[in-house]
Image 1 (cartoon, one colour):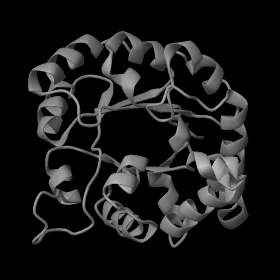
Image 2 (tube, one colour; image 1 turned 45 degrees about the horizontal axis):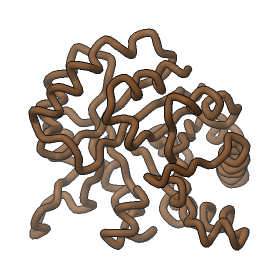
Image 3 (spheres, helix red, strand yellow; image 1 turned 135 degrees about the vertical axis):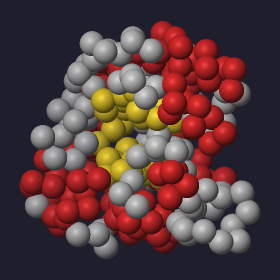
Image 4 (cartoon, one colour; image 1 turned 90 degrees about the vertical axis):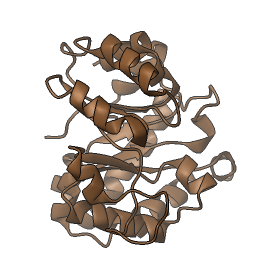
Length: 249
């Protein structure tokens, strides 16, 4: 049975003091939710966040990782390094990583393999840009991103993967896909999985929506049958907004 998940992606925000403050505000506020809750602070604050939340019900996850185990990759962090400080989940393929750091389906496939080899769960992101949607190509783009990065895997691997659909045109813009648009795409994603891996894999896959989810629209979006939660950006930086979204379940 698939899980409801709400993950807060803090991106490049919050120094150590701000991280401590936000964690303190979040502690104990999500216990009544029916969702699994995660936050993704910056690399510099992962260890502190993990230690602060060891006894809490919020998982600390990483925003990215490199595909190599070690080597001459200045500024990068490996899967085993994340594991060594208690991190069990990583976000891969976020649209900002694709756009600003030239991540491709091929490089993401290598990161996926590295994460799974190290028993790290993956939140795998994908989604179309505005031009793709205006041209009616959104399903083709999404299908290509999923298949190119993930469909070399066996069915068992999908037990350690969460999918996150993020229409690029709705990230940080204030625009949001309507609940119906989100549902339509999530249903398409689930069918794409089912066509290759069967209904069991598809039915058990948690598919999150990422794109300007707010307290005001979370309940309606999460109420759609194929939407299993959210990957939250800006609203995750405000404790009251984030736990309102978490408790939308």
